[in-house]
Image 1 (tube, rainbow, N blue to C red):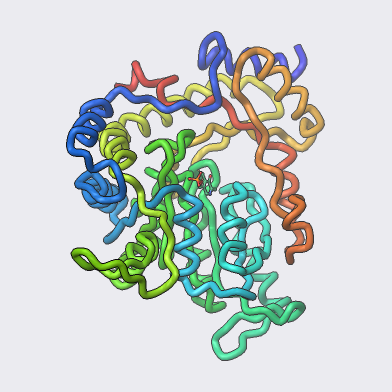
Image 2: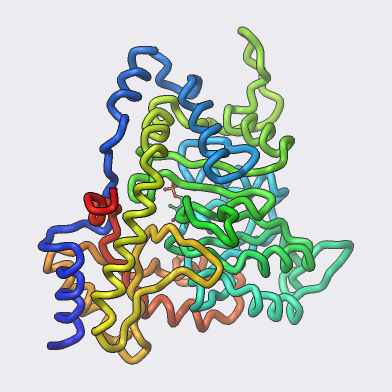
Length: 389
Ligand SMILES: *Cc1c(COP(=O)(O)O)cnc(C)c1O
């Protein structure tokens, strides 16, 4: 049997007969109770007890001192980058292998994403290669990292924890320190993932989460900004509520803010989902083990495991093809989807997207190779839930 047929069989052996989507939410907790409570209270919009509770519980779960919830993960990134001091005309280092939101949020700030390479071990940005690149292409001027070719300040770096696998965050933090870059972690995919026991998104000055419908936990749409800095948290909350000066009845705004606050209705869903998060994480880990076993006998492929010293949430299960099978990727995607299994390739790399075609970038050999070789497999927690719970 060809490789495509072998992949179909292995997926079937883990998830059963299709159709099985790439990722689906599960609402088996107190969602209906909390939503009813929210509706009965009439506090459905951006003020209400579930918003505060969800923030408190997210902070407790992640170990972040503060969590500020917003309408989606992209908005969280936008505000986090603004709070990091990203200004029009700056550059921000972003992995070439990411969802477009990471780059778009930089553009929203009037800044330019500067794409950097990844490492195969973590699927995230490669701090060793980036350090070497910065050493050769930038100058430090008054504590600022300046791109020698464009003359622009490189203000920040946005590591992203790909498919839930933690990036080499200690080395990224050291890089930020040495080159004067603010670290903003895009932890949209890594709720529940830790490095040395510490939650992703809590290493950088700011971190962001997403609760989109396809993420590990969903509020329909939603996101959060994590920070340990009280002033940043206060400013984040102010910016996402239109920068309205608190007052009983007067409407005054002291800067340009955004209407990004998460509605109470969505936060109610979030509180119910958060109660199930440990069970979701157990199930995703179990699903990973099953895929690993099922694919052990398939030559030329491997299931991506969490990096050493890390705990991954296994948001999306990832099949990595050997380079010799890269040419078969589209046949595998076609066959698995025809069989009813929701598989997909990695995102199109950022520097290949029309709006970013002229953005600065370092050589990207590993991101290019990963983009040819990655296939995400059906990953919903419920696929391994009944046994896990
Ligand atoms: C999901 C995601 C986001 C945020 O997405 P929203 O849909 O706006 O919540 C940002 N970055 C990455 C890498 C993501 O996967």
